[in-house]
Length: 101
Image 1 (spheres, rainbow, N blue to C red):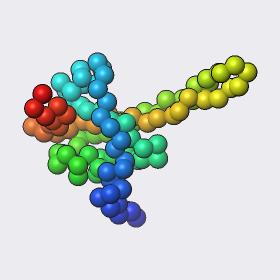
Image 2: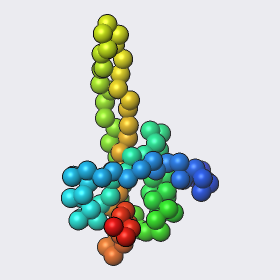
Image 3: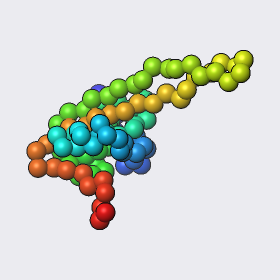
Image 4: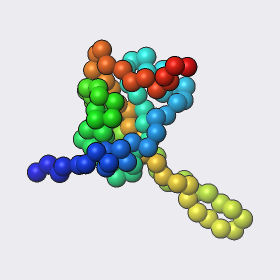
């Protein structure tokens, strides 16, 4: 049973592209890294990237960092949790993250 997702929901799944040294190295292998919503699934991420950038996605890898404690004086809390997705595109497809730079 497949759940249909509206275009607005797809845009909310992808938060922003990640621009780090590792992510830039991965771009050479046609892999792009994005911060995504915590509850996003791999099929939803694939559909969102294909719809937003009009490319063919081959695979999606996700990672969620574990919670880390943060202490301020005697108060203990946790750092915000996030989820990242590494998306591999088909040969010949690419995403232009820096237009006209």
